[in-house]
Length: 162
Image 1 (cartoon, rainbow, N blue to C red):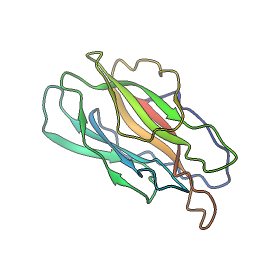
Image 2 (cartoon, rainbow, N blue to C red):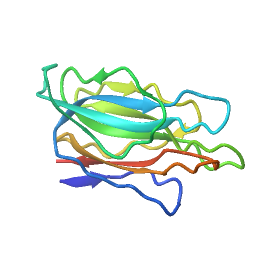
Image 3 (tube, rainbow, N blue to C red):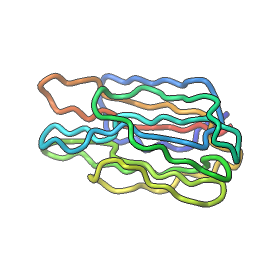
Image 4 (cartoon, one colour):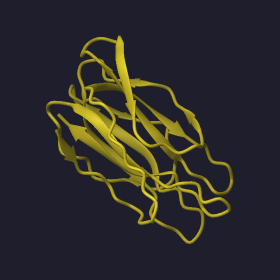
């Protein structure tokens, strides 16, 4: 198992990193806070569902650290294979309300690309290298609640290739 590059975007003292059990992912969903007009967080979590290729029968689900805001979006499914690459949408730091990670696009092994229902701020970064054997693990960095300060929630994601 090896990591495919992630997009580091914000340095802060509290980091929450977790690698959950391994599964080959073909289905995914996001936890997203919609714009609230101040102290927006956008992308709060990513959940990967595991199933056999060409099957919609879910065997397991994995998630890593996630923020407390928002709701889970609709589920996206790679109908003919696994998730093999990703591009993270990130808002760079501003002088005001920062959101950090906003959205993610995944490429499936059949070359289809799906863009999630994440936030609107920022830009998509470069695509990760293709993981021919499929993405099978996740590690995220989430900023803890800042109380009355500016919250960002999910700041970084690293997906693992098995």
